[in-house]
Length: 278
Ligand SMILES: Cc1cc2nc3c(=O)[nH]c(=O)nc-3n(C[C@H](O)[C@H](O)[C@H](O)COP(=O)(O)OP(=O)(O)OC[C@H]3O[C@@H](n4cnc5c(N)ncnc54)[C@H](O)[C@@H]3O)c2cc1C
Image 1 (cartoon, rainbow, N blue to C red):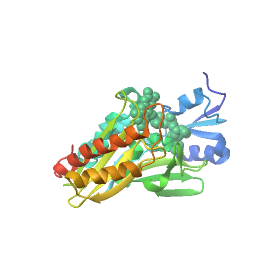
Image 2 (cartoon, rainbow, N blue to C red):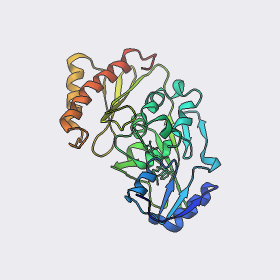
Image 3 (cartoon, rainbow, N blue to C red):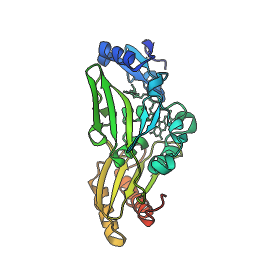
Image 4 (cartoon, rainbow, N blue to C red):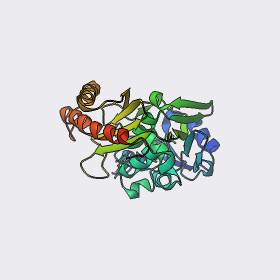
């Protein structure tokens, strides 16, 4: 199908994009990489009157390493983030997860912030941001808000981003040297959205386990370092606590099994050697 008619604005600055959003609100949509939006337009799941393309706004196309985070601008593609020098050292979880996000071709266009804005509960990048306890930087004509990942995504394709707001950047906290991390997922084929994805961070005392593929959004939980039966019991309790649905990809029971199996693999990998990442 072809998309409905819309006006197209190619923004040259963040201010210009924000002005369009302030004027049109709910009738406007941001276009970043177009890897989800174009499909939604063609299927007529959305029908905005105005599309504001931010992909060529220079100030949004930067990745910066600050004292405590890597800040990725809203026009930075997933492929450019993968190539960012030092990613494996400073953000090993993201370096592990990015190759699972679609295909090289989709990562060459799709942006990190676009994936967060789209808020698919099976997406790898919102899961990593939640596991890392990162932040989303939102801007509108009313000002700038910085929001914790835990407060940003509410439900399937639903976030705290208001119609007149856009994400200008996302902040991933830097890896703590000596800690461990692991990322794994199961999908039908490589490049598909995950049936279940697991992101784990481990320090000398605790593990933080994020699970994607739930029915609403990524879920993150923390518990002390465990092994053997104690770990199996904790992961079983986690599997039962998560909201899973039966859908045409997999049943809830299958997803709970994946949490037990992938969860164990990822927790053990992250704990095995805190000085290395897996
Ligand atoms: C074949 C294929 C396979 C894929 N597989 C995966 C996968 O395995 N895992 C995965 O996570 N994703 C996957 N995707 C989706 C892909 O990662 C998209 O890039 C991502 O979901 C959206 O990023 P985008 O930059 O393309 O955003 P767009 O498509 O441009 O926008 C998506 C939505 O976010 C909004 N938006 C975008 N940027 C902003 C912003 N800065 N502020 C406010 N709103 C904004 C748009 O208005 C729109 O509603 C796949 C896509 C394809 C085509």
